[in-house]
Length: 67
Image (cartoon, rainbow, N blue to C red; front, side, top):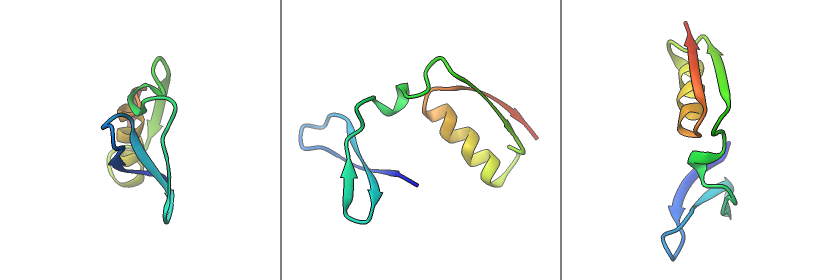
């Protein structure tokens, strides 16, 4: 799973680590990737479901949670 780690030299779009020692700069800012999309996450009261719901919301999706 990719994770955000550092900002570039200019302080622009953050770099995303996709594997050990490999970083990419996304073409779309992270908060706009899922803008306008809706996600339904079942089992979101804890654990993986909660983490997925939070990640989708951070990516810009409208999220409905069911537990």
